[in-house]
Image (cartoon, rainbow over all chains, first blue to last red; front, side, top):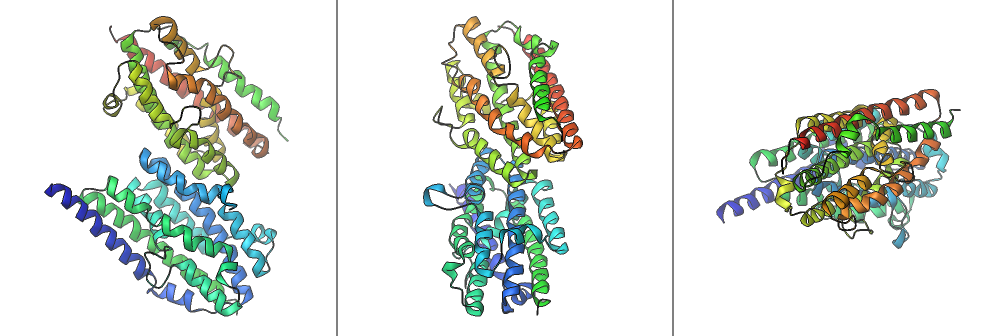
Length: 242
Length: 235
């Protein structure tokens, strides 16, 4: 009984630490810089295109994580990837890459723009760094590295709102486009609340020792470092579009 | 532009030839006892797990349209196959009950050395290969289980018939083997269009053929390894 309670407390305490990590992410200079910039149409366009590449990289990483994970975790990832890759036909929802491209219309972008503009050089480096965590780290670190990005985008976990929410509100403020018309941002504001819980499920089932719990924290911390580097470069890109 | 029809026909020939090799013949002509049958079913569950790892890696490296296909394919395997009303791992465990196996038998099972080596080899191609090679290596195993391609039936069908003919357990009761005797027709067919769309150059063509050959060699080593161990099971 005591051992069971200790395990549960260990998991809950790691989860709280992870939640604090994703909250702290918004206090860091790269996030403050990115979120402190005002949007022009050119900046909104550039960010929207880069986000499409980011979403594609997430699909690579999650599948690498699935490759190495136990069956029960593969199943969780499969469910998560369904919405991303296939959408929800019953609810009339398209996959998330198509959604990103469709959202582009409100910024004056065409589908060809998303094909034509490549990821920033720095983004390519960050994408390979994330792939490295997903592909080459022990599976608990790998799953934490991907899942923490969903946590950082969960309105339930981040005080003051997730990244999609904050970017969406800035676009609303600066370009007068209501958040609900930003179909990709609006979708992620709700979808990532559920996705944000994936790591807690994994922790409860598979992370009972101190070592296993530390693996989650290690993967999450390293991913958040890459996330800061990536957001800093997005801020640089936007700033250069004065 | 490479000749894709020729490529597919070469892959199909390779799948058919697989059944005439010494390794496949050793396994398929081995007298089936209940103990050997149990051993095979448990090992097959571990094989299924290795497939899930490898398809995950294929999905990771492939372009988005192929990712979506693999995701659909994995639905039957991981979540629920409507033909069976359960995922394929649960199906294998359920099938085991017919021949006196319990869940624990699957959980404590160990891989024989040749199976370990084969699984690592498939894993290696899935992780390190160019995506077309990773894809082909996994797809070939379903192709050579497709009764529309393999004359006289795929591996699941043939093993199922051994249970039926030698142990008197009808193929219908061997639910996993039965489902796979038809499921891999659909799985293999749904992936075939990938070659039409993505094999654009001679280099792509050669990549597919090379991966198919490597996969079939590993498959032979694996089946031969199983036959070697199973021959030594008494009773």
